[in-house]
Image 1: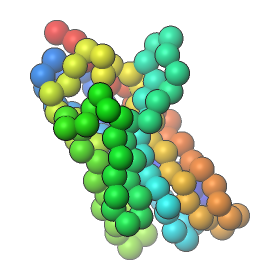
Image 2: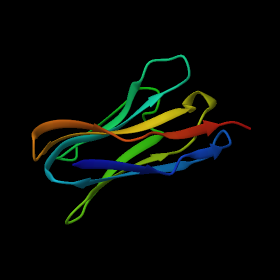
Image 3: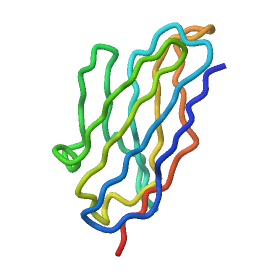
Image 4: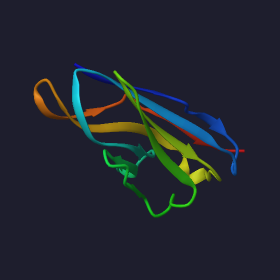
Length: 121
């Protein structure tokens, strides 16, 4: 079984910074991509940032230049970070970690439980 455990959400003032982390563990053979999605109240879930196994990245236009996704590979776990700078009230949402990987049962997609980011003065 594969798990994604997120951390780092919270309340921050406009212009501030937060760093989200997501650790993947379990029977993982390889990870194709890991990324962060977000869902604001009354809106659809959207892709914020994604990083491939080769390290290539892609960002939502509205966060490009402010957010940075990175990935740490350890022996038994992989952790993806999302550094969020110059935060705006419109960044307020529940942020979900996502992984597309190959596990013991084949290709699977796994989601984290979500972490709330609130940008407000």
